[in-house]
Length: 89
Length: 418
Image: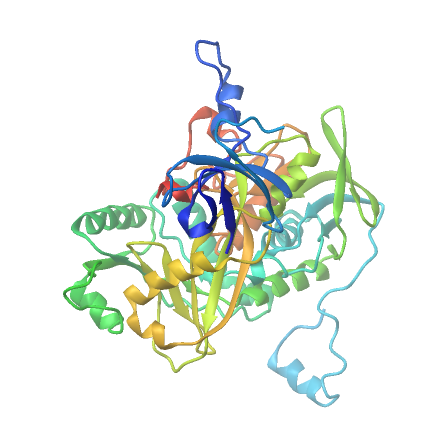
């Protein structure tokens, strides 16, 4: 069982959350000419890192906020959690 | 190579079975190979076997980080089927079914292929319609499919929950009678033994640490046991695909996720077929030892852990109990996990890459085991001829940018949208 420290609600079990994938993916800017390659990278291509991975989770059975979680994909250790709009250094 | 036969069995009995040849050797890597296959799982071993058998290319090495058969080929639920709607998947898998039927003879190794049939249960009228459509598509591609009504399903699997007031009543099901199971380890060992006998070097405990690429062409690989030159390199490393892609500066439409399976304590024969729950993701069959072999959903978040987490297992088994209540009385014997190369449309990739001489085989999602022979056969063809075969032409790497996705289930890595 993972325990995720929701920045809004505190430490909760993974059962309250749903996963939203890689949080480092950036949508191409609006009103800008976007190449096929850029769309591909946004929609399909993923690094899927082994080790530290910044990802989105939604506290679906809690505050329903989207949050960012920095987690190790091979040990499942959770290092830090962030609010969705927080910049991650 | 000694043939496995009743006569050799009797002959070797006289020497207490101490003089059998090794099934495969443990060679030191040579300086150069015509083809290097990275990954000694089912697909890698099958690729090497068909390179030697179909294309007469025997200066081949298989480079395996761990030991052969230690990855997903030893971690699956052994289901073999071709019950796909789309042509790309249906024709590819049905070609594989033919290879499965001949495999024990072909490899001189009993892979215990058991065509016991698979039944996908339907729990609504809409699902029955969808199954009728899929069944018709399958039959158009020459794959056997039978649409069963509730009574027919009840006759085959009376232990399922047919009571009236359940959340997901059984309306019927789609059956592929020729689907089945096989002994997964034997598949790896059978391919390994035959490939080895034809001159393929199976190099275990050897991790690939990098690639030598010059002027857009592959020159060789770097490994924990030294550099190896190669004219062609094929990657089939399932859940580790992204790790190797990173070394090549490639980003792929693949994410690595964890899939769990489990078996119960052995019980007397109760279930003849493979059965899947249609209102969720759960499947079950009974092994020859009597264990109920079960599996279902991904753990749901990127993982390289090769071990699972309890919430998903609990969720999957809840579905199992909804389908067959007697499962709740069984004790769990083992659970385990494997890391899956989940592609974005849920279908695999067998293709050339932008680097000349480098080939990619990945994206097998939930269904890697059943594809073992067809994947090996088509990947060997792609490598040997430097062009894709018509069977794997749909499994192209660029289908995501061209929009030619194979929308079999439309799920891929994003289990949370289901």
